Length: 112
Image 1 (cartoon, rainbow, N blue to C red):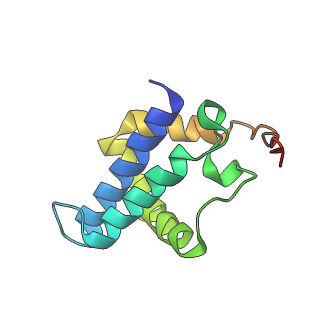
Image 2: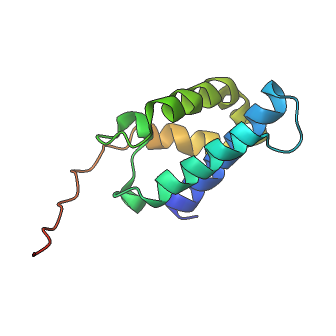
């Protein structure tokens, strides 16, 4: 499975588990659906793509502060459960934390 697809599936699984446990809902509530959409959007814009490190090791912090706080809460509360419900994603996330962040991509200048 390619890296970015795995990253998308991991964050969706974590948000779904979080909402089910914390908000007692089978379907995503409005705030969790908004967080999921935001996280997937930010992943689509990641300049590293397949070379993406774990967010905690990244040199670019692309989440707005309020969304970053929500994702941290999701990870803190659903992360430990991932080993039982999604062991592959949990193990690969641990592997990804050892991945060194690549150098920042060079920006190209647009001619006026």
